[in-house]
Amino acid sequence: MEGTQKNNPLHGKTLEMILNELVDFYGWPQLAYLIRINCFANDPSIKSSLTFLRKTEWARKKVEELYVEGLEIRSKRGSSPGESVSG
View 1 (cartoon, rainbow, N blue to C red):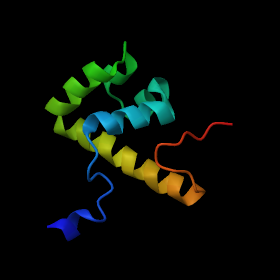
View 2 (cartoon, rainbow, N blue to C red; view 1 turned 60 degrees about the vertical axis):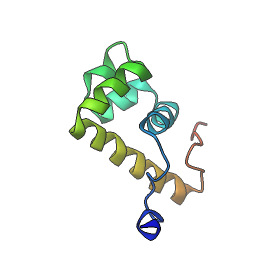
View 3 (cartoon, helix red, strand yellow; view 1 turned 90 degrees about the vertical axis):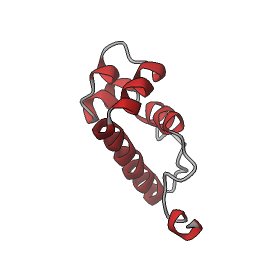
């Protein structure tokens, strides 16, 4: 079982950790643009977003996919996963 998780970029990450990293990296406006979820666009907060994402599988999947895509992009650029790419 341990071997199946070895290459899973989400292994050991909580939804809250993923969401915090995405908000730090993209910001709420860009996140709302990339994933059309009302809780990202209107008065966004980590708490309200987590509540929605835990209840809505398709939305959680989109957030996880964006996180994995971002990891791949940042690894190609040489940035660490939690590192922001600002000027």
